[in-house]
Length: 248
Image (cartoon, rainbow, N blue to C red):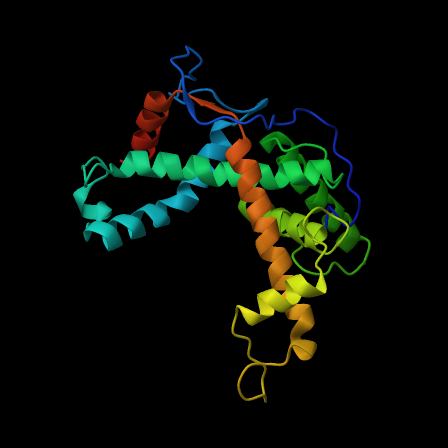
């Protein structure tokens, strides 16, 4: 695990976190493939990162339009207008929001000294380092616990989870210190079950679970707040066109 091993990656470019909403620009910075320049603060979002994230959100788009409008995008296509929602544009926006939350989690990791950089290139390099380290360990007859080889999607999922676990396990981090009053109030507001216990589980027996859930929710809120504060610059029309080309 890169975090546990203290893996050091050279600092390249750190996203800015100045408050700001999506900005629509008409820049001339568009690749031959039609992919426009996208920046999160100082971090440039690479085409490969966007495309991979878009593919993971495709199912969310199919589900949204099926549930909301009873439309099968597989047969109806991506360009229809459903009460002002256009599927390929919805997908582009959803992908950007997903990437914002991802980079926000990495930025919190940067602040905690867990990773040095939130850029896609740095993430890929960390994955390669982990894969090479695991391969070397196996070649030397050492036991490698857990997954030994990652692709980029599985590695990002793995690393983002590791960042969250590292942050929430340290009660000295912002919002992770819980008073007895906080815990009691949270416990009172939720239902808790314990195998073999009828009715609501006693707080003394599940205090650890209550704290873990509280910290998880607080961390998720921190990530969302960080994501909302990232200054995003996008040529939306170009991004919409690029997205349509990929899903059409």
